[in-house]
Length: 126
Length: 471
Image (tube, rainbow over all chains, first blue to last red; front, side, top):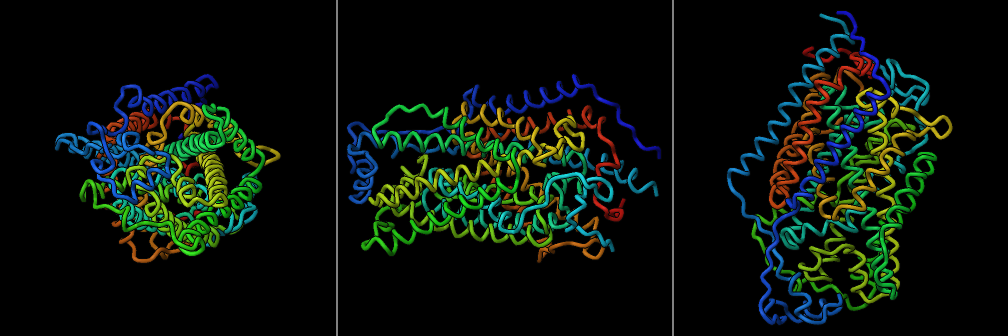
């Protein structure tokens, strides 16, 4: 098999390639932030006129909150009552599994094809 | 059996049989330890505590241990493959030789984004610490941005100037940051007279049940994320077969100790609801002891840990970018070595603005999640990599610097824990997961159908190994 001779890429073409890659990366990473989809949904049920007792804090916990600068229960109520929302649908879980497995399947399949060419050129055809 | 000397001080293994022009081989095992632990130790100073927020204090401890098992598998697998594929690019170069070009391209990007996002997270924490200290001394409303920019620029300059100075700097400040954690632990348990730790009163049941334990695995990775970066220095260590396994395995042991001590001290000093959302938890822990000396020590420790980590991240991300440029996976302009300092200077400079974009424009937990996701994709690749490595080159066919025991159990355990962690990320950060995977799918198609045409085929295979079995 004749060795593959790659075409020479112009400086402009190289620059375009880097810009495309960066635009995709920054876009993908910032997209959830721009669309407001980033992070988990937090719920926070702050009771009216919260007290340390109503927030479930014992004497030691209150002492520690005070040391941290939260002298009133109302100041710490938002932090204490914040909870993640872990509810999810089976469909979204299945979508995630398909995306993860599909991704690795694509990579391994294309890599194998490319790898066989590399080995064939490096070591010669059998 | 191949008699290749991977410890050669004159041949770098780049071209077939090696070339004499490359990165300087000047590092020892202590530098490898410093690089690995230096990148990761910041995980004890910030970020790990978000696992407390996701599942409660006990969930964070379980996540710490399970993540410890995951990383022990990573260290074992990586030590075997890296001690054999001793070239810049680390896992990228491994993938190129063992799995194939597209996998290598993806792994290269995992490395670059995991480390660049980690660098951005470090810079954010550095700025937050400066702001906190300024607030405590009566200077409210400090603008953090100049400090963030200055930190990244200074470390990039240090990396530009040379790897030995860079990693010696990392080694010293990492050792200081590690000793600070030990001093805090000893002070709160032995030296302060009556211990300020109140585990009995502060510990609660699991607030989310066992689902929270699974969810906590997401940020549990942060205790150790980046230890695999030791193999980025493969081309710059004097004796890869000895230094890389020793430095990596010593590093993971150091981190297991530091992570357990950090958890123990912090959950004994702060309510879990606060700890789960704190920006600088170890510094807060020192504040809670009431000792000015400890506060100063942990303040400096936090600063050093962020700088050491960002320093190692610049080192590793630039090596991966450089290696991809050298192979034409990216424009070959990036594959240049500085004629005087022998560093990949163009890659170092190019990645600076990318780190700044995220350090100045994204929230800390999101930046950390981006870094963790890239790391997780990389860890999922590792078991596939080692299984194929053993299948294509069984133990008696090429010389290995280190052979990891109990194969394939570590690979299976690692794959299972990665699956659990994907689910943990999905619980709360599913949109980032899908967005990031979509990105990798699109760039994979771009690489396979466009970029790969500029890559020489046989030239990618630079290791002097025999033909792989089955090909």
